Amino acid sequence: MKTLYICEKPSQARDIALVLGATKRGDGYIKGDEVVLTWCFGHLLELAPPDHYCKDIKPWRRDILPIVPEQWVKLPKQSTKRQLNVIKGLLKNTECVVIATDADREGDVIGREVLDYFHYKGPIQRLWLSALDPQSIQNALNDLKPDAFSKRLYAAGEVRQHADWLVGMNLTMAATIKQPQGTKGVLSVGRVQTPTLKLVVDRDRDIENFQPKDYFTLQMQWHTNQGEQIPTHWLVPDEWMDEAGLCLNKQQVESVSRAMEGQTGVVDIFKSENKRTEAPLCLSLSALQSLASSQLSLGAKETLDIAQTLYEKYKATTYPRSDCQYLPMSQHGEAAEILQTLQTIDSDLEPLIAQCNPLAISRVWNDKKITAHHAIIPTTNNHVNLSQFSDKERQLYRLICGHYLAQFLGDYEYTSKQILIQLDEHRFKGNSQTPKQMGWKQAIKDTKADEAEPTGCIPDCQMGDPVRHHDNTVASKKTKPVARFTEGTLIKAMASIGKWVDDPAMKQVLKETAGIGTEATRANIIETLLKREYLMKKGKVLQSSKKGRLLVEQLPDLVTSPYMTALWEQQLGHIAEGSMEPCDFMEGQHEALRSILDSL
Image 1 (cartoon, one colour):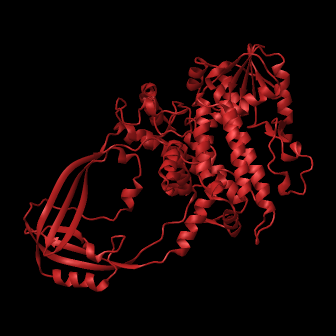
Image 2 (cartoon, helix red, strand yellow; image 1 turned 90 degrees about the horizontal axis):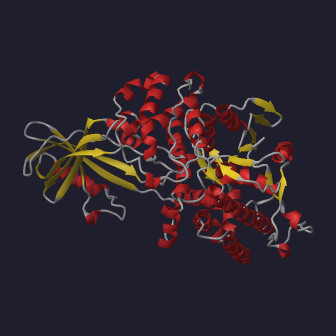
Image 3 (cartoon, one colour; image 1 turned 120 degrees about the vertical axis):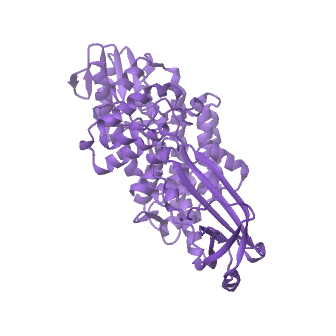
């Protein structure tokens, strides 16, 4: 045996083995003439628990904290010891190892930590895959990366594990020791889960403390001399509006309404412009989870699981745990083949595909925006059988396909009209949008446009034209609090958490690091908060529990703030790039941990 491929899971190994021509099944591996493929089941190893480093740990007490290992130890998971021994035996006869785990930081850790555990010193190469269809696998096999290509990812992933252990273990013990009244049992703290919990706690409190206000609007219909209708709304004068721009005085609105009856106004401003909007980008995992929540009522973890099935089982889509919504120009050459594939496997898409121009280049094609992976798109695998899909799998697949097809359907073109009517000191404004070419909107449901109130079509006018009052309506409304989080909107908030931060420097860091958590972990964070009963789910809505609120109240701002985790992601990125050393990162974590414990 010459080369051993270490995959992340059995299904991945089977797909690669098929392309390599390896067909002989063994216990925990697949063998070919010159290659053997084996697999992990996710992480086969885990960091040793605190009692491995501190023998006199129980009962938990403050004087033993912080527990900071001098030498980190990884132990085999009980559930995967057998497979670990299989890999140990295979490594004895290996001349070269190819790490074929998922192409991301965590994938590198899963593969390389096993090699380190067994002190493997031979040559290493990296198989970097973004899709599991045969052609993508063959392309990646023809372009095996050297060991150095992703070794820094492993360094970043390992110190992330260590730092998470330090925060999670030490602060969980500290929070549990200082048990707030009304809680019992272990209080779990995590550098991503706790700021995420605080997002929901703060949102819930804002809603509970919200005081609704009555406000009033005036809708006015006008007629041109030709009898055409012009729908408008009254612009509240500055002296009559509150800080939110609303009029709270019903008598004022009604007096304006009465004064307008039977009057003639004048067109003060009229604009008519032909406009166009570009197609939305393709989907990252966060974008997919957000859309699946709002349009398909799918939870974040459920969406990830289905996307993983589309990728692994059906080979219908590319790597799902992507944080990128762009595509590389080198991939554009496959567009015609992907479109043909979609037409073959999904007859419902034929009318759309007939309108697609495979040579079109939208803003999604941008090499400068590509991260470790490109956006989630359909593959060229024409053996996909939609009849094998569940309803949810089919719906999610078509959501992904729709955003890809949108790139080849052209811009949405429309005529935008704006009118301002003046009558005495009062002004009335109207807007309308008339489609000319639907373009990408044929492939993507535009929920914002669907939810917008129709204003009616504004006829062409000239400045100075007289318009006669026709009808008006005074409406009584109430201000509403911001909506509670759903899994989809919470995922979005985690990814764009800088919007919830006031400090400019911190906001910039959060923007650069794409929020808290990663594409691969955000759904699991929400699941963890639900399992630990810090959050409750009511229908689609997430709410904080009493236990979750008490935990947030007792923790210092540095733990509940997103800044710490955002700074981590920024520094881990520097480690992966080679501009920061892991030891410098860990030194900072030791200092921060002691400071946090002092404040508890």
